[in-house]
Image (cartoon, rainbow, N blue to C red; front, side, top):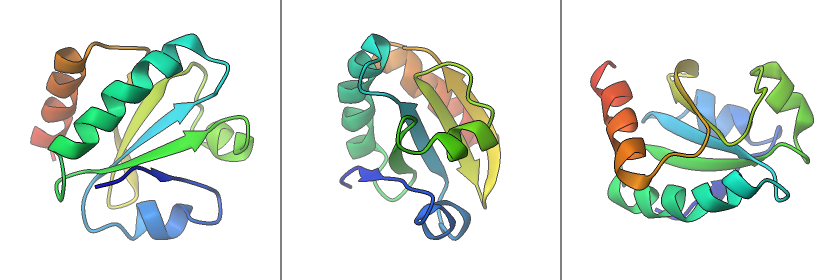
Length: 109
């Protein structure tokens, strides 16, 4: 599944109405750790096809959404199920470590 970019306008459709859990990468182009996370996030999106929807949110363009979810540090990955936040991973993590955290969150649903 290709990554999609989330906006305030698409939030309800992409997150609240999603039939599967959603993970959102809150990032900014100027953020070094965000740039390191990007290829890891994209690679994992291919592994979770039809299990987890991967979205990216530019905190510079969508400051209100980032503030609504109290995102204080980036990169921040927020996991939602049925429109509710069920997990949060803050900071860069290597692929296997990130995969383990995601699997733990999904197992708790």
